[in-house]
Length: 307
Image (cartoon, rainbow, N blue to C red; front, side):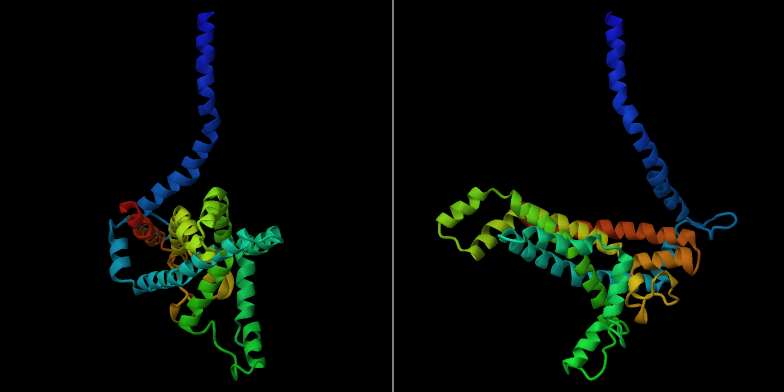
């Protein structure tokens, strides 16, 4: 009887491993192995045909010393993030605060603002291409009818305005998500704190600044770090804005819309078919993301931790 109980106990302990085995196998095959193989591939010169040629760190050296477009794409990506992320954080917090205090239509307001986040990137690219088109764009037609301009503005043909349009796409798409996260944080704050502040005579603006915002600090840090990570992987918006996958031009006017991921895909699969060089771009971007994520975390959370 004792031996049977021991076997049963051992059998029960095996079940968690058996249930997690499919996930672990899928993770090793479809995630871990490609990551390790891409690191191996970044040390080789290979176009997908024939044998691989070991070149060591030459791909990384060429990327950092002989490829000005890489730095241009990095500059574009960082500039778009600097424009879009602070605005999205601020507007998301304001919209969450307004939604939190709504007495009627709260669910409808949340749904309407969250819908852009679940909209497909193809639809977003089509919408903004139609809005900012030079000839038939809705924005230019509106400005002309209001006599604010004499002719259409080249929104997508000028480097700075092109970056601003991409930043606006990012803001429009992610604003509902930021609002939902902040709204969840505001809902989790105990109402006793607000009642005590109200008894002490605290106004709405004073309560927001001294109570709500400090208690939402961890959420702000989370959104900033994840936005930096997602911002460096920006690809769908600029690519679809300039004609989609069938477009012949790369990077828009003066390569102002060229992001790091767009350059990675172009060098790897479209223009050059340099798989080793593309893997080097991917791993360099991985290091950059870690670096900027640590900086953004320290700037947003480090000061509070010291205090």
